Image 1 (cartoon, rainbow, N blue to C red):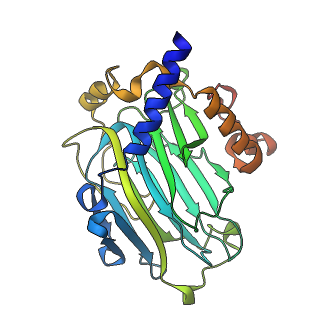
Image 2: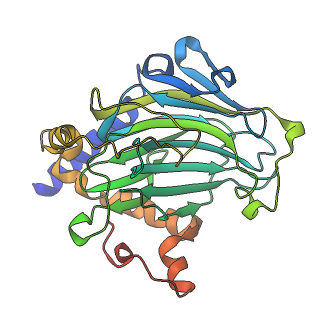
Length: 309
């Protein structure tokens, strides 16, 4: 009976993650907070382009809503051709010095070479929890769905409904986890030729500008925190205003068990999802902060020895 109930919950959540894209659009749900001249919305706000036109002029979009927990999804077609030195992002972040953040960053490459999918999580201003992957498809050929799922138990990064990474809440064991700061969802494109492609060895060919990332649809199935404040930034990891922007009342409200993302079956992956994730991690992981620390003789973060899924 328990397994049958879990299967129903997993199917329902998959439907939520997919159906969340229906009926939502960028025009209604978002603001352009940096270089609005480099953004273009068409089809009534269902289609969005963000352009990088120079080393100092990219673009950023931010949701109107702030939230604690839920899922955020969009479909992206990454920059075609020679995208070396460019970074396209889709992430969530709070505002403030000790900010929380959950990252998808897509690091460009020379023509014919694969993108790098960079993931990270910040909690209480502490990051450096990177994992990187090579895509098993061409992310510049058509649109692919990228979803961040965040609940009190764990964070899951999905690509086309396949989980690629889990970061579990071990706050009780002293590992920071985002639980109390409302986040926005952001999308951006910006220049990072000093580090983004092959450690900065390959620079951006500015004769190919503008570099254009295309988006379709946005899904926000979240616990909203109205009136939690505002702020903006120029790229992933750069949101900073004074204070740490905690909202204890919203955090308490969003942690209760009556929210869809707090269902008992959503504190772990299903057996199918676990098999999918292990296959991706076995075949496509190119960097893991835990393995890197161990290999280089540095202190290994405590969560590396704790179960993540």
